[in-house]
Amino acid sequence: MTRITRRPIRALAVGLTAFLAVLLLLAMALAFFWPVDDLRDRATRQASDLLGMPVQVEGDVSL
Image (cartoon, rainbow, N blue to C red; front, side, top):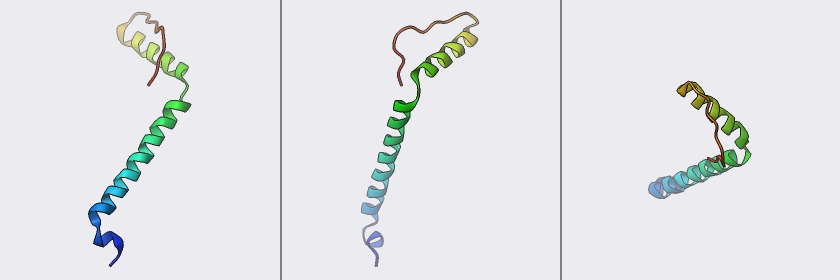
């Protein structure tokens, strides 16, 4: 018997933990490398289009 078949719950827990760690690292990398100014411009443009009037975003924008 392999280790995975002897301890399936432990193998599942380790696999799930590894998956969540990779997902967290990807989210952190995306937040770090994505330019915030593009986010501000996009949010301003979408809000202006939805409201039908000029919208200006002032202050810090973050994820």
